[in-house]
Length: 260
Image 1 (tube, rainbow, N blue to C red):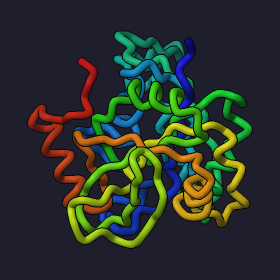
Image 2 (tube, rainbow, N blue to C red):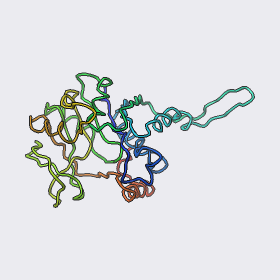
Image 3 (tube, rainbow, N blue to C red):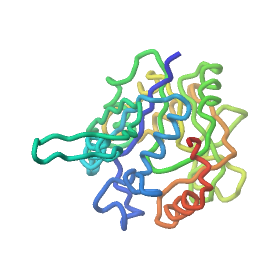
Image 4 (cartoon, one colour):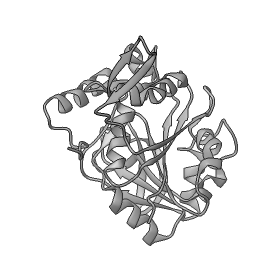
């Protein structure tokens, strides 16, 4: 069975990590010499996901140029200047199909998803995540759970620091969204979704924020279920958080690195 596509939101400015993102999109900030976007894609690829749709916005051309030159940068190469020929050796490219979609610099998260809907396989679920965080979530388990419950949307929930907004659960059902939690007992949106294309029906336009009206509507109509993840989960909103990820990678202790 063909694995679902994966949509990655990669259009934000990353204002809280401005030291790194003033010249490039936040998903292009590097961990271990590779963009965090690459780490996310490599992680999904370990579960057989090889087709990606990347929602571009702020400085999207940087991501386009990265993939345009990916084969060159992933290979040993000889430039024969006399004959104007290029010879590639020891190529290390990935078996990925990557569609890069300009979704507008000022478009909100829901609007970005709406703009890429024509590239989705209708009738088939797809993964969706943000281009600025890493986890060791069980992607296969999440997909199996999504198919079993039969609703339009599955949202990963985690229990991180109190600065994040909360999601209140009734078993697996998400019943309410609220302001920042003040205890360690409230779950929040972990940013890893499985969605049916129909989950995007509630997105009205470019100004729609996915995490508000669309998700709230799905919860209100009992079309949203929670996949609980208790393992590693780390966003990259600040330089300190970027340094945490860099330290894990440099110490060969990166939980998301499932590849050899």
